[in-house]
Length: 56
Image (cartoon, rainbow, N blue to C red; front, side, top):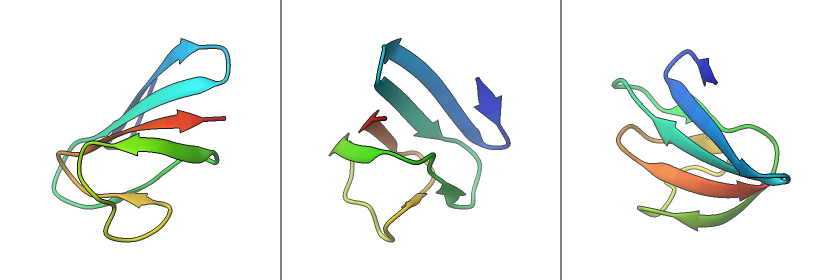
């Protein structure tokens, strides 16, 4: 699913991968960040060219 510049993919029930595209940070869906490819600069937001794994 893609919403604006956020591309998401459900890996299995309760887990989601989110990838930020574009040039601006995007709001993450509700959930607990389990892993981020790069440290998040602001909680709840994903900066461009970064990916996170979330537990929903």
